[in-house]
Length: 202
Image (cartoon, rainbow, N blue to C red; front, side, top):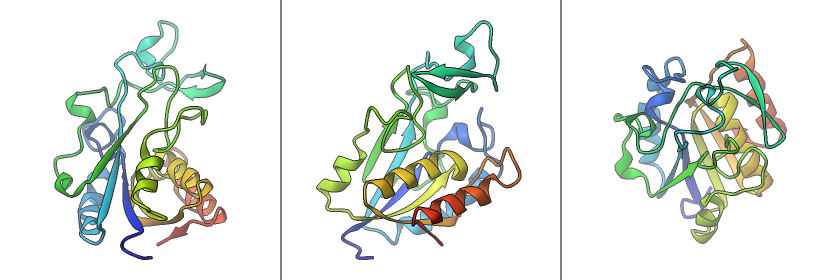
């Protein structure tokens, strides 16, 4: 991969997704040092940031008759209700302090529409609204993506699949990713799914 046409894409390394956060991924902070090392290898570094309004409809707090873990329909998509997380301009939406944010050239914010969640850094879950990410990468003439971050079985996987559908060549750095693993094999199945769609897992 040419350095000029390759970008590192860091997914959702935010306070709410690591130890102490409302949607903490176990050992999430352990991958930060690997991500910081990767940043030194690439001329273009992009990071995604979950950026929800406080009244986002994926939050269980918005319903009097539902709790965290229940399912509802949002714009025709099944949506699991979650605790409030990554609320815009809050400490919990900030990148973890251990992350070398000085290396980040561009931040793409997702999940800003109250009516629909956004796992992927490219589109909402209905693929009806796009973020600014693809346009930014196209303007930089980026054709190859190296992807890492949280969580392997949700936002990383969704971003990888969308990137492949947009015709990027994609590599996923496994030591710089962490999975939720609600079920024991979720991480393994996620990597298998990404590889079947022609992502390279390294």
